[in-house]
Image (cartoon, rainbow over all chains, first blue to last red; front, side, top):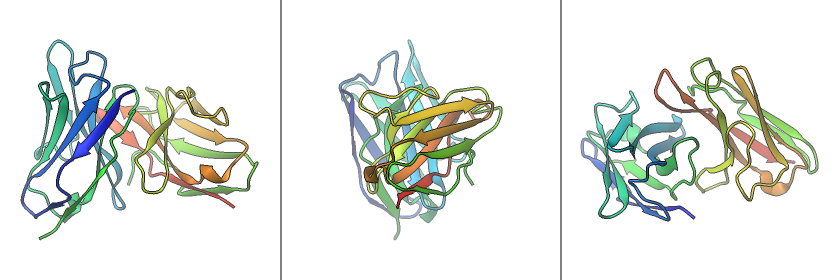
Length: 119
Length: 110
């Protein structure tokens, strides 16, 4: 079955860049039937979808309006993984970040990474 | 403020039936299917119901979903202590072009 394994630092300083990676097993990041998502969860904002990327003869990437100016989601076919970069972070970006496979339902999810933005 | 509206809490005794509601709009629930997720403490959300009323393999048939118009509901029958968790509804929003979620319902088994 498909499994997602997240990695990345749990502490980021304000104004710096948050970077996380989601390694895929049991599927291909360039699958024509999958979409690869990032979601975060915090007490103040609940579950918030951040964006997704998928391959349908070419790569498509879409971002939530709330983070569109600061976010980049990339796929790495050589490592069968996808990544999240969020620039210029503030304490409001403190959350548990999840990757998840779509497209019609988010399943499965990665284990989650608590990212704290603090100096 | 979440796009989809759920009651913050629900409760029941073992064996009872509990229903959790989820209200949206014409741009999300009204135009697309609803998924439900169960989140046990300290773990990632897990898909419980997809396409309004379909159960992934391994999900007991005590869990069922339905949708009517711009609202959906999750029913849990034969409540068990291990059902104590947070439950979230989700749908694709065509106006926002992204997934939207409910604020979550914390289910307590008394």
